[in-house]
Image (tube, rainbow over the protein chains, first blue to last red):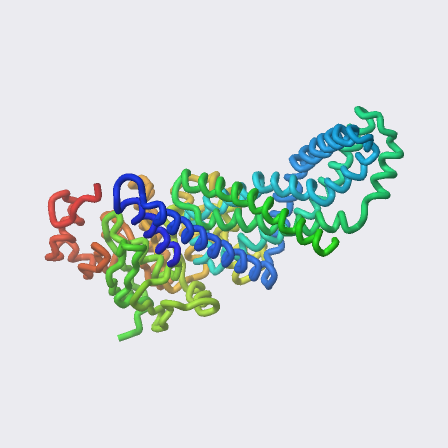
Length: 279
Length: 254
């Protein structure tokens, strides 16, 4: 209902007078539209959470989605992580050498990868691969009446479609982040040892000495949140998809962009929080 | 008089400023085959979705077997849907499931039947719609449009419903296949003793499967009567629609 009201205001603002709309009216309509969109997304998220953590669980569906989200994302996550780790090592070396601090490369690489880049890169990659994929799949199901068919066959789309994707994403993302952490650190090691003449044993020892459990835990907590964001955005945009190829395409784009922005925004919020609480 | 299996009472549905249903009154008796006619955009699908509980009307009431289900949720709605079958216009088969998994979806998911037993029931039901066991393990994309409609019909009858909705059952099919689908609908509805509500603008299909016909125009039922008097309805709108004339009170939707 709020959405309709918001739309009417937008529509009135743009059609009442031909030409340039009243800026205040436009800002008001846009703000109302934004708030109602955020509200709808939040309610959708709560509903997905509520179904994901209460029985009945479609275990086969969760498993299928874990393979899709987790296993098939391994190549893209691994490749991204190795290049990010390698580039990070090069840049830290370049910056550190200005102050004679090249020896900090292993410690800064491991800190950057585990606390920040492993999770963020995985989140961003999956925002593209998984969120858009979920959205396109659910959007196609919506426009071909498959979701209506599910309901008439006494299966809730929230329980059968959305909750399994949500659960699979929050389980698979931390596992993928662990892989990204290991491969990212390895990328830094490769460049440091083979291009920057670091001693391999010393590099690994410095890495292990500097790394704490908290650094890994921080990345894993972020991964769970990113998983929730990616799955929710994909399901939400797919569920709201409009008819036709354009509608489904638009839903996939919105899911990807929305998930990517939310991954970065929640990452900043969590980083701030973890620094504040000393994690 | 017995309680109708489905009754719509002054059902109204709007989307923003667009009023699609403006007070629909309709009754379907047990075992009756009712066809709802109406042009494109007349609100047939919206009416059907309201009756199925996929949409909630803005006003009015919907009774299923005497029980008010207008705003029912949870178990009440699930109980109602157990007794309803639905054949969607596009078939709406699940792409990721095989034909037999589609047909026995309700048995597997809602009734939690063992897969082996569910597959047997699915193959048995596929035979009723003239499809062999050889299609059971295929995916919907691997079979023709007419076969997809039959699979969808099999899915809608597998749980022996009391009421079946057919949304444009013959749309997109050649006349011979369409006629075969009509025959199957009649055969299966009669053998189940179920009531059927079909929405269509295919007059050949309507004449064949209907006991009674209702006409929906501008969000209201403007005529309701036995199928055999459709050619002498005495209603100008019905006459124009039945004879497919561009001239008359109904303006073509172009």
